[in-house]
Length: 305
Length: 181
Image (cartoon, rainbow over all chains, first blue to last red; front, top):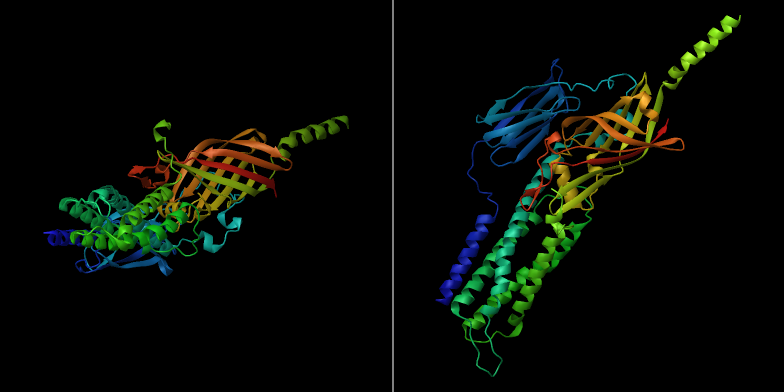
């Protein structure tokens, strides 16, 4: 019975792990290439215009820039409804909804020049090129934008899963004492009930599966070139070096303790550190959540609306 | 002869206001731009000292241009700043560009009311009659005020924390020191 419940807990963990992990094995569908020409109202090609296609269903954004002659192409798009935005310096941003279904689809866009502020067009009015910014500072970088979009998407999943993980983790810590044999050596040892033991094991397994799924989205979120970390994120990441190993060690020690308890023994040896390691792990995990949320305005109800 | 001298003097006085309205150019020497983001559990300020600017006053009108890289704003946390750049599409539209217009006659007033055109996040928003306090500091002039910007002005999806979005208002405090070129 104990073995079957342990198997059930492990199966539950596996299912949860599978359900929250990314799904790279999606059904393969034919991809679409969207292409066309970006031009001004006078018919001049707008080289360097930025084109962003956002999949309405998944929220995924693909970007590119118009090249010579205003030509652009976004290959390997998944068929579906997209929100397309075209923008260029000196022109109003242009947006439309488009359904992509055929293998090749063409969309030519005509941009409208921005009306200038009265006086801005006077020869004496300064222009952006007068200010001395480098081309690198002023030029659009669609690749970087795509990287930032992916990073934010992955970290958003990381944040949500992280908060969800805190629930079974707290429950596992709370139920820990109920799953522990009580009494000193030489005295009558009071065994925990099988239900308590299995419930605690299931919570621990769930926490472990959710935790490593959460970690996946942080570890594999794209790094931004030239990014030097400062502020709360450094504390958040440093604390991962405490709760990360803790989340490996806690289930291992827990499994050892579970086996000892099932064999009718009082938990002994290194397995007896299971509770302490679990507490330290949960505390550092909670601190990491607070750290990334810092500074928190605790008395938020006192704030003006 | 006397009538001739009187005419010259009269003409000279008449020309004085025109001299005062001659072309002057200004250059930005020091700047602090800070946006304020508000959430029930957070109050965050992102500060940039990376703005550059130039101004020209001629023919009774002043035109000023101030620009700052979006990635020059620092809120004290890399993660938050990168999220801000992503949300405002700061890699695709890397500059915040502000054009200000006001009558040249106001250049010596204590409060200058300027019309602003702000290009940010691929959008353009206009603000009329924004007050800026002017303080003379030797040959330099300090201009300070707040641009009443909002997320919706620039079609920015408001970031959320614990499913609660930040407030729509993101006022931008401007503190600029100019000197004549």
